[in-house]
Length: 230
Length: 111
Image (cartoon, rainbow over all chains, first blue to last red):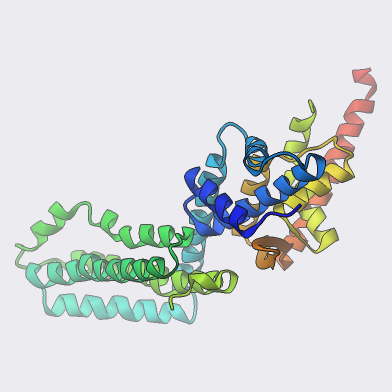
């Protein structure tokens, strides 16, 4: 006896009701439950779909899908940041290191030329607050548009949300940064520190949002064409 | 089974070896195969299998593909090149572990 399309839809709802929000993970668990239910039916065909489903679900232990969800989240998050680090390190190896040095010298020259708190603070604020905000808005808009068309949530989107927020952790000591605004000028050492920090932050953000996220999204589309935005 | 704890540390090696032999497998198939091969002596729990598969996937040891089976989607796992190399290393480590255990068990000082 095989499961009907209606049964499969019921299993998707069942996984969602048991705190599995992501469609990609739901799909794997639905297939597992479906296989097990069919196996149970082979031995006992008179059993109802709901009873067979509950027998199968019990095999996941007392925490149900909880552990699987949590560990999948950890695994993907770790993978994401590992990829970011792998790409980020490239900017300190030839040939990309030339670009990094060029950016550092360029930013330092710019800061030296306009050596005042107003300019430096504005540039730091623009790069670390306004631009990430714009990226976050763009991502939210894309996710909403996708969800509207197929009503599915994806684990990868959650990870990308997190990365869009990470610049704000850097901004935690903002009260200190605000003080910079009123400084008339800075020493060369301070300017080197600001330039290098800003370049490193920008590179990290660029790698995460422009290289790693799109690569992982492309891979996701290959696996689940529904992930693509129509 | 009482000896499940003994197998726990070898779960990744078991999965890698099965995937190397069979090419590609989905989650439920792995649990079924292990049960069949060991004649029911070893049962991989769902709560241990999927986190292990996801971990290996995120480490680039496994690659996945989605196919349609009947009216549902199925996620297959297969070894990457890194996975094939990892399998060889893991098997060597397991072999060395088994030899060490064998020497310890057969040691006269223990008998």
